[in-house]
Length: 436
Image (cartoon, rainbow, N blue to C red; front, side, top):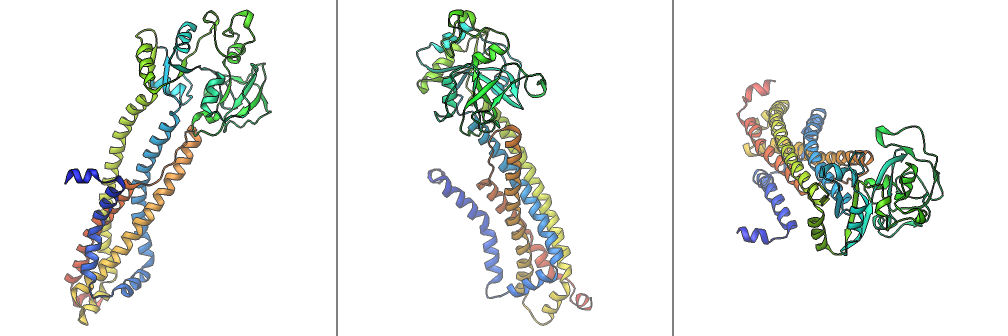
């Protein structure tokens, strides 16, 4: 049986789990409503106590929406961060923290890190299995957008060879990211520093935007790419080339005039070559080579623990809400105790009364659960937009099967409990309710 289950497509498994969770609701409804028509009476009860019912529905919607929205958001963040690292197969840097280097290189977070010299860079760039070896140079920004020094090859690779305009030909030309706020033809002067460390004084050199990158959904959308030589020049460093080639832009670089780079982004000619390069350049006390995907997997492992904690918190919250709902149903049942007593007095069957009360409860619970899913999707979308704006990582959170299963399980569990106040109507004192 287990092998048969595992052989089913994921969609079929999810649908079957959802159906199984909804079976109790369907079964109870069919059992209680057989040969009875309680819809009109339930509708009247809903309208008669509409304000109390709306409050009740809102309570359920908030509980379901919070749980579904938080879990969906975690999944959206996971997917967004993974997509942002797709272009970064292998990074080589000075020994240190892989997480710090990944945040600096992939997500452009300001960091103070050691530099690799020209000999190391040339060893990587001249390797027979390396297609792109891009040095990075940080340190400047323009109106909050980080300025990154690199090579033409990396700019083209980052933009999937779809740069609007053209690539740079001179040292003081730039390619702007889609969210940098710059367009082709704009001129700007970079400020020293990034983030909180930026200074008001701008460098004397002026750059001209000659191209723009397509939107990638990564922090690089806000970046401004310039020749790595330009970053070195504005800071009074060597250009990476011997004096007789001082006007050259891009590799090859002369190791003796190479100011250093915090990281080298490597794209291998073949996928398998990444592992060979990792093994060759992951040298203790010399260089560090790592796969951002591996670092992210460790981060996701921690996020997985967080997700489990969030799921447990959501379940606990819903259990508490279920208990509150059950108490509220007992209270609500007192609102129409006189009507139920009249029906009992004229000979209405007990199952008809139970079906009426349960149908009333089911309408409130299912409506609240449905609105909760909609609320969760709306909250996840708004939160995703805020995270995207603050981190420049494209986060698109949407409710999935996990959230649907959670909501269906909540509804089924509460509706099973709703049988208790429904049956309790039959045990209420008839004469006392008639006199009420």
